[in-house]
Amino acid sequence: MSGTDFDIIVVGGGPGGYVAALRAAQLGLSAAVVEAQHLGGICLNWGCIPTKALLRASEINHLLHDLGTYGFSAEKVSFDFSKIIARSRAVSKQLSGGVAHLLKKAKVPVFDGYGKLDGVAGGKRKILVTPAKGAPVTLTAKHVILATGARARTLPGLEPDGKLIWSYREALVPDELPRRLLVIGSGAIGSEFASFYRNMGSEVTLVEVAPRILPVEDEEISALARKAFEKQGIRVLTSAKLGTLRKSASDVTVPVEVNGKTEEFTVDRVISAVGIVGNVENIGLEGTKIKTDRTHVVTDDLCRTGEPGVYAIGDLAGAPWLAHKASHEAVLCVEAIAGKTVHPIDITKIPGCTYCRPQVASVGYTETRAREAGYKVRVGKFPLMANGKALAMGEPDGLVKTVFDAQTGELLGAHMIGAEVTEMIQGYVIARTAELTEAELAETIFPHPTISESMHEAVLAAYDGALHF
Image 1 (cartoon, one colour):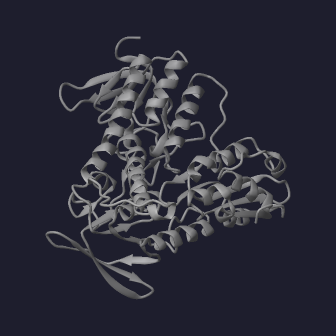
Image 2 (image 1 turned 90 degrees about the vertical axis):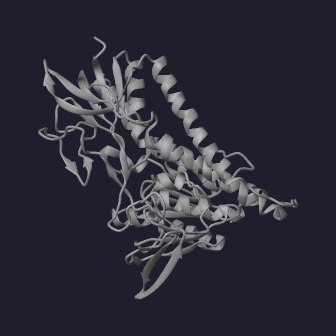
């Protein structure tokens, strides 16, 4: 291979793209990454990682103002908001540098610039790389993996302006803490920002057009999340319709209609968190057999597009829009290219996590979806108020819910809300992946005292065997 000819070229260096290149190198394939901005993609630089750093700061702020619960007292508790933001950015920078190191160690070259499909020559795909400075470069490879990710969806009248109306990017690097904030959209992104800013002291209103917040989660979990948010002082409006925003030099007035009644909110900032769209533009799809559906590239269960030798992974390839899904697809795709036997992804075995306070985590079918799919179900529930570790931590609010196939005992889904549930959901993911039944889960010994014991109790509860509730 020459310096511009490879087995695999990956367009995009996010959690799908860089993982694809690393796995290719492990399998002895020559690979290159084309990335125009930051290695690690949106997740590492403007999503998963920096938001968790901010949320950690807000958790600390919450605890510092709740010291009396634990028998402590402190005076003049304060924070430097600029340092909180700076720490978040530093964490992202460190990890982005780590990705660069891993690629260098694996001898994977990174070409800075925007990559696009540019036809075929000699049986190989051409990728035109246009850097910010300098002349374009043409790379060739037998296989091309498109991993260009996605960006925030914008709605008419809600376009981010860098000052009053924010997308997730502006919300991650504010100049100051807004006193009044309105968040539009209550999915993972909107709920996490609502939680962060409220715990830092902002007055927060969360607006959702659907009948409930966190609409992809189990209905009971959504209801508990709303109750927790409102207890914290977040105003929650669902089944809402937005009127025309009116901007002044320093604030925004937003008319919100609920149940036929309109109320106007004047706030310092608005965060628009209404979904994402795939980055399908300017990557050379025109004139190919690659199809798109609502801004996402259509693929088969091995990440292949309609164009031979071209694959798509991650957010570009559609829901669920999760970094761990992108990384798993990356490995699957490269291993299939290398001729290994692979198993297509079952999206009902992909966990979803929202890192608000309290945290929310789930995998598989909700109770409603399971019934709609024709299953006869057994449902188990266990409240964290009955869990010793949760009480000892001062985190008694929460619930673990399991959904089983009543006929076979298969774990169809699990849904959790409470402290650190994002760290525990993997236990249920393993159970679904290994096709365990209630019998194996009931016989599993969980350590005491841990919050994870509530997972065991929720299994037992589905079969009328809960011991501590």
